[in-house]
Image (tube, rainbow, N blue to C red; front, side, top):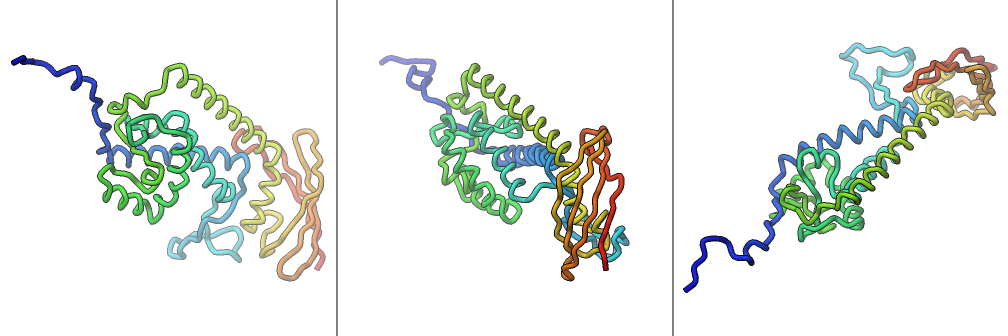
Length: 285
């Protein structure tokens, strides 16, 4: 009889099953990713967003507004909600498709793999993140129930995409070659720099028009105490760090036609480069 004090060659070649018991790390990774994609949404909103209401304050807070015809309110500068949803989806989809992980997951040592512990395909990343908003329903309750009832801790997106979230150390076959990793990282950095340039260009060239849209949304500036209006802008005149927009607008529900102009000056700031200088308002009674 032959005895052996060490593992056999066959035993040594059997891979360690990926560790799926990482629920706490997944929670904190998602929280961290939430901070990152919120920053990304803010960058895009600075470039292309406008002021809009996000809700009213209870009267017990004693908060007042400039427009006394409106309730006290919270205002944010943001693009329309479909764009915010798209930014969130792309944040997860592009990172997981390219690297099998996200910034938050990588910091907490996590990776998304297929059921065999291999690399995530673009198709699986698409399916997984298309269902992200189903998992996020009811404050992540849907994801929590799905993971609690799955032996592999799969949320709804994982079940349909046939994927797992595992400890990166236990998924060696999901690691990308160094050359591929750095090529994709360079593309991501180049894309991010292009996004920053586009957002700055948007805040500069579209900023004055977005301020006017914010005035309409919140009843400020030219639309102060006018209780709703629709408007159209004429061709702007750019001169010596200022821009003037001719404007025509219709008051609701009276249908009264008004016209005017608004002049903005450049502040020199990156985040908020334009400020209203003056506006002329011709609104016959």
